[in-house]
Image 1: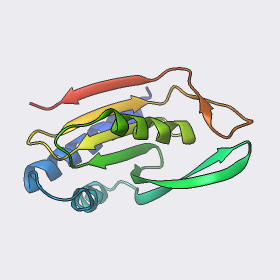
Image 2 (image 1 turned 180 degrees about the vertical axis):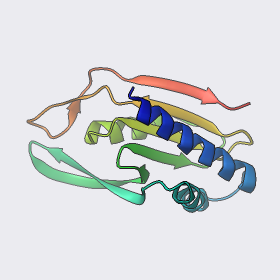
Image 3 (image 1 turned 45 degrees about the horizontal axis):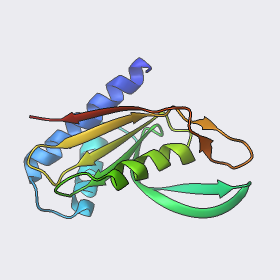
Length: 146
């Protein structure tokens, strides 16, 4: 992975830990989203909330869904405030990578006392006829902060 993305994801994690430490558990996902948005902006990063992701099938738009945050136009953040991450949360994050050309997505869970996060590097290859990306592989890092 390019060095600038390592630096960027480190800044994102630093901000996420700040939010987790300051707010603790128990809030709705939208509260963590707003707080992380502020923390990232304070670091001078370009951040978009509720970034639209358009899904195409056979070159036709079939739906739009929204990633919680997009940082510097490169890293998609999907936030959760749940007791435990489920396979559906991972699938949702992977679908964001399939539907975009973004290089990295991160799944952050603020619903546990110690921030839980997963990072996914985009290893999908775009299939021109569908507007989606075919699975070539994915690299996932699962990390739980102690």
